[in-house]
Length: 394
Image (cartoon, rainbow, N blue to C red; front, side):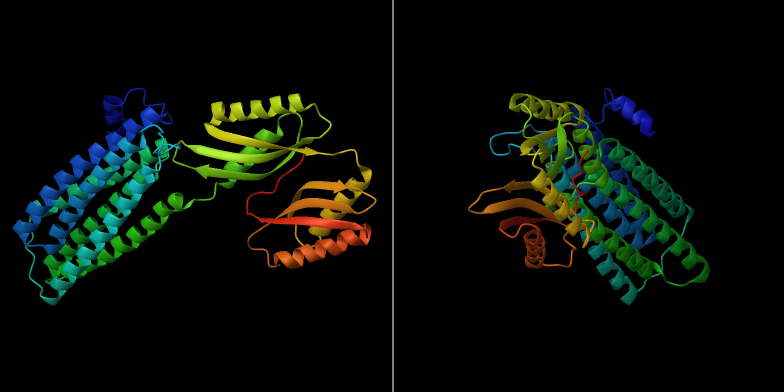
């Protein structure tokens, strides 16, 4: 069924990473969600009214909210596909994240409403009628919700969409909650226990927990989620594969949407190398990343003096001193300026956020180590904090 819908409504469905195909996938998912959830709403509302079940009617309005969520998703994909403009130079792709956040809040709202209604039913219970039509309606609802969850999950993986992943999890929760209502009604029918309100409350708690989890998951990209280790490792590996690159550091990655990635990095190259050739290599790396990975990469070139033996010995000593306290601290941009009136050694270190030492203690420790080797040398140390993989040298 999913493959048939994709073939019928999408052109060139295999190109899911292209912005136009992404918009089409999102709109297809939105329209499917609106249609199926409206059908479920009317089926469950009629069933709940006929059989006097507050749990089924609450579940019906849950589906009506899901239909509204699908409309949010639909408009979210439409707006996120808008090109960059003067007010939004990085595009509008983050609107998709906002759509996912709205869906998450709607899930939480439904949970609160269902809990309130269920508590009322517990305080004033009424018997729920049972029949074949009710059984068929609920089983059909569970099956449709399971298919809907799988449908959303497949498309979310195809286009890497957090909004559709939230919709997939919401549909899964709906299938479980409807199944719980069904089981409870069967138990009530055979035992006479009035479980309708308690089942509704249990479903409400389940929906609330899932809703708050979705809020956190959809908020992360908006707050600025750290890139995956796999992505960082791949960027390091690719850049270090180019000729002339000695090392790299200060990699920063900014996500302005699923297909809008901007990054900056410092690349170390030999100071004796021809500046024009070095610049050509940097330009080539930037072009290749934009062409092959759609990453807008900006590189700052750091010239490194490699022929100063005195500086090289001091650098090795400082690196060994750092390794003596932690393997996770890295150093870059090491420069030594030797002058009769006063020498200086300048470098940056990158410390993990979880490192226990204060910056002042670390600077004092390194200054003492440097002065033990070069008493008349002034250390100028910059401490940065980052949990990204360390810069590596070839």
